[in-house]
Image (tube, rainbow, N blue to C red; front, side, top):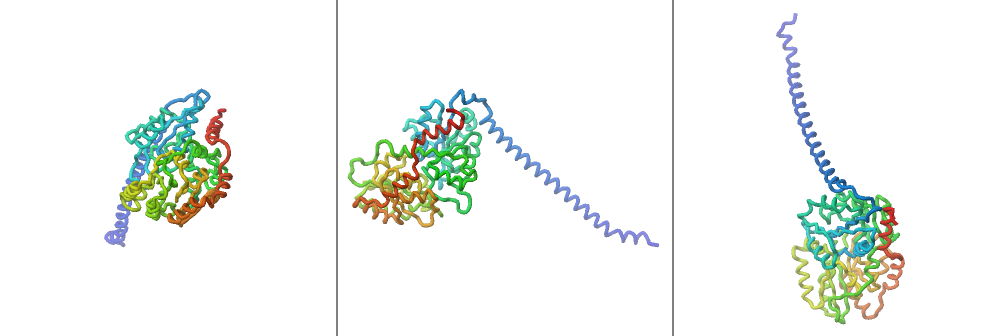
Length: 448
């Protein structure tokens, strides 16, 4: 017969196991409760964010009932943050003011270019719009909390933003936060000449903005083919109208800062992309361009990309670009242009030297010598850019650009003259781009 003590000995290890299991169970229950509370907290936060976003959307788009378009004009809001890109939309705004089918509204907003630490510059945009006589709303930093109410009051049927770069504008004006209305886009550059895919999405043709935009108005069928081939939407939101700059850059009087001078007039336009895959060669060109200027045989207007000052300072040291500007403007034949309406400057010049990409097609409209300082390792040209190559002379340094320009001025022989005529025939379609844009908008809304 087994004694009670012996039985206790038999079950003692099991009791220890049961106690341990009980402790484990308690720990698991406690952890489960903590996880449950954490999940509940996170879900409540998420629901709060969703509710806040819905309230904002209701504020912006759902607070008022608008009359049908048959009884009122199409309200078009233009957000202006970069006066250097004004030429792309200026004539569209002007034409809408004369057309009873449209009610254009212009607003100046802040911006932040690459290399800058915060948003600003709305005051500069405001002053320039005032100089041009453009009535506009000012949306400054302190006004941003009122953006939902402002959008509700304006109630735009369509909204134009000047660039596709969301990082250039305050978050309130990102493509995601503007998705309550129909986004429209006329590129700040007349045509895109570069292939920026890097094995993935082309960030100039297929970023988040392009995937949310309702209408892209582009220069020609060759550019639409780029969207068809490289963008997620396959160009279904792209309309070929011609670009407003095609007409704007070639009409009107010319301008030059010293109109009585007999010296040759050169524009130098350095680009801001100084990093990997970029086009900018400012650090390598600045000394040779200063030497050319000091030679006294030409006048040079420095028309730099608006993001170059911050990028040059970020790359070369704080204050570097201003020091260079002081050297440049101290010379009697050195000038600086930072305005947006650069057509008169183009028309008043004799030649352009650039390492950038946008003006490689725009300046060809002038049918004047165009010299491209090409940086090794930049993003390749796309098919439109390869066509454009025939219209300019390619060199590798500012010193070589000077040699080519002096030879052209001395002999009158521009090696790219015939190629340029071919480029313009292929890439500049007939017709009036502004009229085409307005007609495309009327058709989209069922108006004739």
